[in-house]
Length: 474
Image: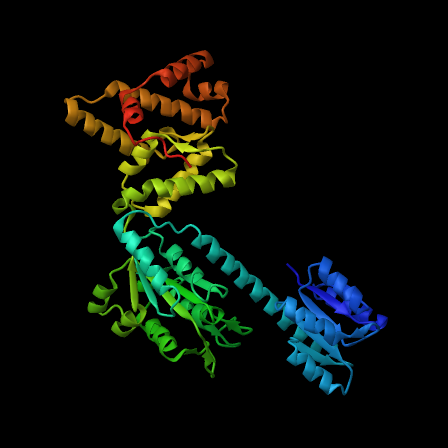
């Protein structure tokens, strides 16, 4: 999206000239000849950069500059001053001007200043987006009822306000980045950037330039300076996911940043000071990697000042109803669905399944179920086949153990109902089309559906009669 520049100057010739060259460079332009007009534009339009003349018919531009820098610190203001007005330029910079130009100035000089201002605007937008993502993700952190997770929640409250480094371990999908964002959101750095990078997803030869940035000419294609992610996280938090995949040479460079609080861009000759909080995550055993010579011992101890471990979902079955209720509520709200409950058999399937993909897999399964559910209750047929089969397998095992018989009739009825509900979901609720998909006559489909919905399999009756086992309400 092109930056919008507000030009505040009462010289009509200069105003026309500036509008023309800025539009040729791809900028959107707005114009004002007085302080009052400029304020009106600021109040009613989206302004990204302002060119401000100080000598205006209704007052000194410094008054507007002071107001703007107080109300919108993210708006770069380039001040235009008359030749010889050094005092005004100095005062403008003290008030927070991005830069100043002395009249008369040439177009290249102006465009260089505007490019710098536009880069500043783009960076601010990116960091604001990252902050919003951080706060949004933090809202999905769920404590749960298992003792290990409740203890973890207490430790987070103690650690979050401090600047210590944190290492988060756990299987893939257990919510390591969500936990890191939660800690950031509860820290004094919450209004600064949260920068996350997956070390395993970036080729080794590119990881250094991504983390440290580079100077022009550092390598083929490096035409301008680029700040790395460490520098962009200055004042905030840097989260390195899958840090166990980082090569030893890069580990040494990262350790230097942590110890000296400085970095050097690729191809650079001077150090840049940075103030970051580092959080890292891994699904590897880093202590074993240290013993194998695959991870630096000094970096390991530097990272794990505090270490948190997230247990897999299969060890948190008591927390499953809480996760399910939260994910159903979020997905139903986003999709505009009136879903308020989960059927007991659907919940039994969710508890019986092993969830190798952990919380990430559960969330995807719930979103799918909400998508295919046309009523107010998530049922077994709405869940992925592998999850539904886990409940059927458990029911069969319980039936065989309890009576020596497998409830085949009930299993077949349940399977038939699943097929009908999936056909209806695929056809958007059109019974004629659903019947065609199943190879049935529409009348026959309606009869079977009525019969199945009004039958009471033993498993459903048992679930409905068991005290304390109602469908979870959302």
